[in-house]
Image (cartoon, rainbow, N blue to C red; front, top):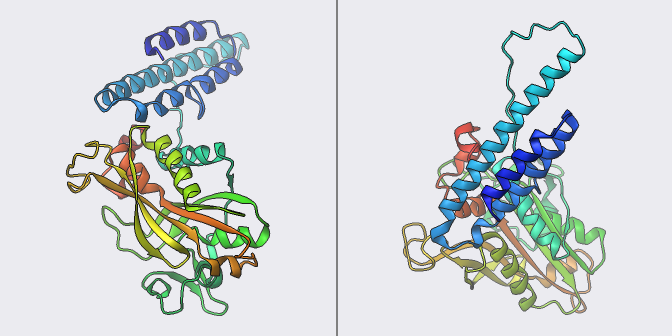
Length: 337
């Protein structure tokens, strides 16, 4: 899309506005979550590496110009309305400009990821942040002796019955499968909690997205196809993927999923540790014991599941090197997105 043509069109449209309602409609058209600016931003990952930075700066410049013109038009409309109504206000008094708010970067990334999976037929489901020990561990085939059950790795808040702050979004999988019969395809975003020491790559609260699909004859190849659509939708069509064997109690077989480094295009750099690959999520086929725990016939049904950290996806996509930046509420950081 021609950025200069968009700016010319916007300036023409805003000149003809006569009311605050029309101005709000124009704001949504250009600055809304599914507006023109959002559409331009979504094109950045698909551009050649050499063009991304320049295109991104032009989009941000256009966004700032549109925001400033909307604020100016809003002040003019308010002033004209006060004069026409004979409000008797002192129009010589300085006004207080209110900046337009915007969605937090993590919310933007969650919405983007959920939108990709919804287009593939997944439903978005949320679950409680206070969970039972069964849903968080036992139902997911996590044994009693597993270290993740210990107090140093989980926030317990009640002993009898045991309640805790969920340590992952996988309990939504147990809740959803108990409530519904196959076929089902669900994506579950939300906050999770672990007693980790806060540093550049760890936080005691962060966001995950759990996804799973269950039906007859679901194969590992179905998982691979779904994740490829997701990865290319977020990071661009040019990336490559690989699956590495791993172990998770709730999936068998299990894998960790990497993409080719979006900084060096797989050649090796400091971001990817000279390996050319970046880990983005864990996945696998749902363990038969998990299906049995929710009352499914594991001989009839099969399924896959995957889980990803939203902060990690955002950090990789936007080149952010410190997870603490997401939660410090520094407007100089937040305004960039």
